[in-house]
Image (tube, rainbow, N blue to C red; front, top):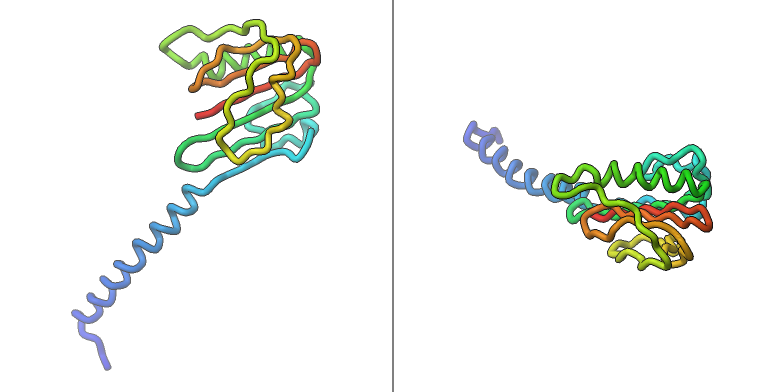
Length: 165
């Protein structure tokens, strides 16, 4: 049986009606899937290849976790050990990079911190190692729901970074 031009047009239209929604569903499932990257324990700077931030040269015992759900937002945690002065300088540079871009106010300054509260966690990340509440004496950036937050443990030489957006 030979199809007429009309028959081929109907067949092509039916193919489009089926293919477009199918590819749309597949595309959305890829676009909106959860993306998780996290360390299973402390790693060296050389092994921290997918860390969400560039690390200073002296960073060691690095742990990080990042989550992106492809639609609502993302969450990032970074912790590393380094000399206290290097942690302080890196904290100031990090604030300037992430928070200094704001136009509604000046960049926040680090202030003294003792046993600060842990940031709220809303993702599927395993962040038991992100122990900012254990800082006996240190520095922290002001709390904000839309900016990066940093902490420096000035007794143990530990830098912490949290970003949620």
